[in-house]
Length: 581
Image 1 (tube, one colour):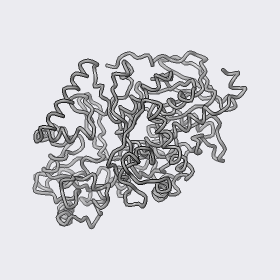
Image 2: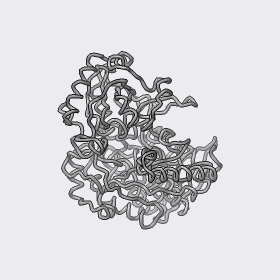
Image 3: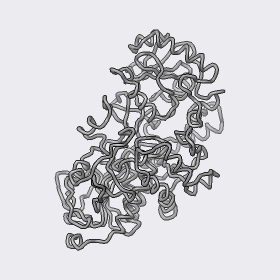
């Protein structure tokens, strides 16, 4: 049960703030924190009961090149190199000046957080760009991750942080990260891993007994927990479960906002700026159908707050969407399973299974259609490109028994030996032979057999002549490092065989509101809507619907949150705004 928190209090009617931030994902938390760092009186408004948005669900990888972590890790990189890489990846799908602003201002934002706040990061010694085949890509030095955080420091505010996806935890709520997983998998083979695993499990149960939940916050929960801790220290006021129902210009960039919470409505004023960071349009009931490809995904693994309601308001004030993105959303293939409480879990298949030896994916025609080791975004893009009359939605992820057991499949964790519960509810489909599996899936059995025969012949040579799987550093990184010569390829062995259905899942909007390099919203004629800013998924992505590397949503979200906040705080207050306050 969620404990009581002091954030549910609605601001007093008539209150005035320098900056009001609407939406509390990583971008919104960044904007609120930076505005407070600039000395502003700040209000952070969140529509849902939790802070963190989809960022809290994520690994919170933060792609910001050329920070001090580049030098600490010994990576060679430069602004020129990064811009060349992004120019090749993004092209004219998004304005170049925004990429320039991100590359130039990104290190400054990260370093200010590092030096002046409790929002801390660390670099990974190996975390390749996804489009590693492009000139200018790197294997490490750009992707950061938040340092783990002791959530006990938040007191009751820990209950405000959006909990991780249950299927990404173990033991009923224990968060684990990429450093824990190898030890947990080897605990029966290594005394060191056994001791490590016993230590983190014992500490988890102690924390849960003392605090009611795990306070060892990792990944997305760590990032949001750290921002919340810093925002509290700097006096940011926070209102959860609060809708913005009106946004009225007062002149000079000041705005009056109508806020509603629990049937009560108040008016508040922002004198220097309003930052939109509500998560984008993707759950808007009309825009979802209009702006996503058909069929629009039925489920999404993202957080529930991005309803697009704020977009309806600011579109009426002259804001507009970009129409140049390669994809309207960033994608991940998801598998779906009903939980015990009746809700549906949409599990994103990022890296744990698709790239592993002994696993392939096929459409309804029983044929491969994509390099399974490409990024999750490109995988779903290929699903849509291949889909003919429902031929590739769903797609089928197929593994032999050895691969399914060793690597897991979606919600089936690596090392699981008993598949009974997953078979019983239909999440997992089993066939003693490929023909039997094809029959159960309703796909072309003859093609499936021929596809596996062809794949096995290629895999035995370690070269995928059809789709070039495992030919880049990124793809090989997602394979099995203990398997060679190609860590992503192994012939499928004898049956039984297993399959999981994969569907498109949107993990964040790419198409958003058009801004300039200061994150200010623009009219269609290019003129500025004074005092209105956007960051995160509300802002049209600087990556233009392309996914060049890990953390390319959170990194720019944090950076442009900082840019929006510092620009707003640098604005003078008009006479109209003074009178309003």
